[in-house]
Image 1 (cartoon, rainbow, N blue to C red):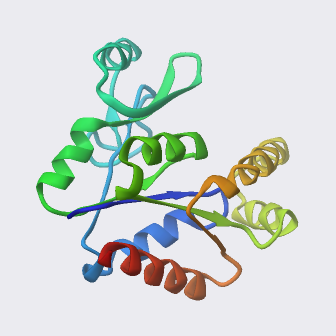
Image 2 (image 1 turned 45 degrees about the horizontal axis):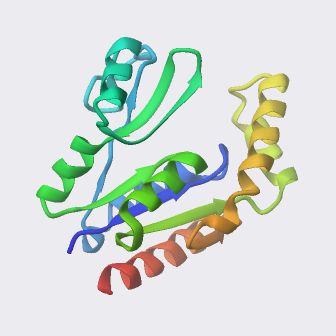
Length: 188
């Protein structure tokens, strides 16, 4: 039976890099779930590749029609969510689904799919290290970094709700620990 892997972590923890490495492991048979959003595409983003881009009205219509496993209005008229049709498409192809979602979305997916889903939370080595990583990126203002760190502290408060937690203090070790845990889960 195909299964679902949910990955959540604060910004700057290495979540995207870890997911990329897991997707390269053909033994895991993972396929990335593309989220839907009502925000505009940025740069080179393409509908159906990075996101399914919907208008706020289209998003609300899909909410009314119960077409989302999970969704959240992050800012006024800026929605993000996981379409049931996207998950079903991947499962029909007999692949395991991997999600990159926030803590609320992770809990909603886990609730919806129950034991068929494994929820993993990735922690930074410390808040100070997280702040240093965000500063090193050089992409955010001091104010934005402060907001991201505050959000990370809040998200870390949800870590105990996840099936497994890993600290990313060494990327290679962390990826291997997660890969081993996923293989064990898929073998059940």
